Length: 161
Image (cartoon, rainbow, N blue to C red; front, side, top):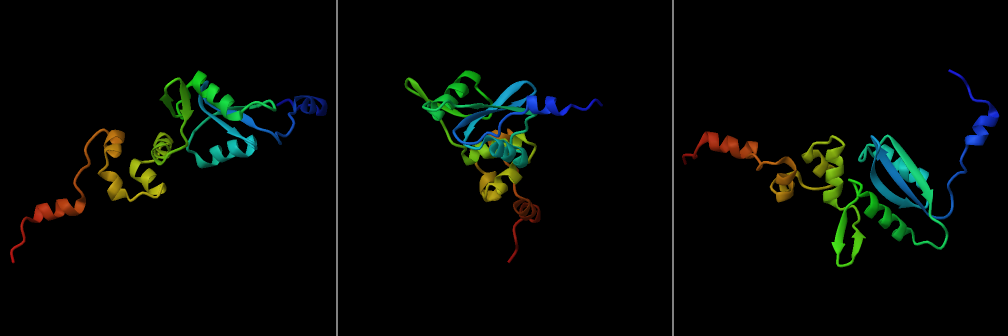
């Protein structure tokens, strides 16, 4: 391995991103999978790394020029790139980004490899209630199986009193 000289390291360094607003892009396999905004993008990207919700292999950060509306800049990038982990709702003549809903966070967890029931539990949902929702059936593609307790009762048959 060839080591860099001090001048090469200093020439390639970037200033610490502090003050103002930034838009960041999470990238996986050459595709932009998420666009976000933050006043502290290094910390925000680090949060994405540690939560493992959105797996990515690289990122890019741009500074939003002073006087520009950071929400508009983020929205335009989302509209242009259509990242898989950004959700948009269409209204007449405009688009509005939706905040991360429980359903969206569950989808992120599942995309990261977590089981649907574990994802629901991690988001504070009652797994048995979640199990019977249409959203669960949409995720797993099949109707829920009967609970073990109900199956055991069915196997026993009617109780004689």
